[in-house]
Amino acid sequence: MLDPNIENTQPVKPAPAEDLDATQPVALNATPAEPPVQGAEPAGPERVSAAEEIDTTPNKPERSRRWPWVVGGVLLIFLLGALGAFIGYQSAMKLRSSASAEQIATLATEQFMLGLQDRAAGNYEMALKRFEYVIQLDPNFPSAQEKLTEVMLAIAVSKTPTASAPTALPTFTPTPDMRAEEEIFNNARQLINNQDWFKALDVLDTLRNKNINYRTIEVDGMYYTALRFRGLAKINAGALEEGLYDLALVERFAPLDVDANGVRSWARMYLTGAAYWGARWDQVVFYFAQVAPYFPGLRDASGTTAMERYRIALYQWGNKLAAEGKYCEAVDQYEASFQIGPDATLEPTATAVYQLCHPPEPTQAPTGTPTLTPTPGAPTPTNTQAAAITDTPSATPEPPTATPSDTPAP
Image (cartoon, rainbow, N blue to C red; front, side, top):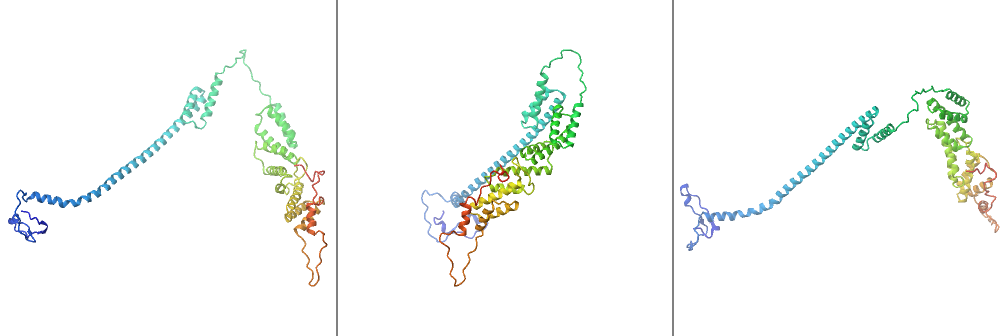
């Protein structure tokens, strides 16, 4: 019979093997055995198995904590597999697209070359189909649209009916007479040797209108020479715009040489500086300061040279600076203008501005000597100088309009 105080039991030293079945646990605190209750279940192996099941229940929480990790690992494996499949799919699609594009390019090139062969052989219908197929494969294929247009024009010309000759007699083409072209060519060469550029160009135009294919390379060289020197001659004569136009025509035949290109640059600067005349004297000074040292005699239709424009612009810019109170800067402009050429009408203004830039230092009276006081109402030198610029018309005269050399038209 199982002791109700089973927790206080203690195993006894095992008996020999033959008596092992007869051993029983001995209670630590011996208590009188209670009589068996009527209807109680006898102690046996089944009760021991139930106790063992009760002892194993503490392991269930450990199993319950493991299953989230198992589920997470399965999900991670699934996600990694899906990501690998997506990357592989994209790579395969790129390879397939590249292979398809390469195949289309090869096929389009092959058909384009066959179309060129058909066009050269006069098989325009087949060439038309091939070029249309190439454009269908690749609308941006080089020269495909151009060749298609040429083939369509060739088909249209071939289908256009031509008028038949009124008679069946053969016509003979006479040998072209080149004596007139040769005479015109020699005349143009002689004019170029004489440096008569204007007449030479007229003769060359006549030759080109008569026979555009006559000695093309030599005629182009003669055009280059005549246009270059005529353009420079016009610029030197003051026709700047016309000369620049001739130099622009020269570049249709060959690039300009260094000297002609330099003259063209100075002519452009002259026109740009003249465009600012009377509005922005600082810009006029900027442009003509570059032209005047290298091409002082350059002029426009007014006849005013670049050096003269530079001189006038300097003192006009000085007058504007003096009116703004920048006297020392104005003095620099006046001095630069005087270095180019003297101007008697400007000297009073320049002197007054110089005194404003460098006022005389006040004289100190000796010790013990009373200082002299100025007469009341008498103007000081500074006031007199300022009045000479701002109030007195004769101190700052306007540039004379009667002399073209002083106030050239822009």
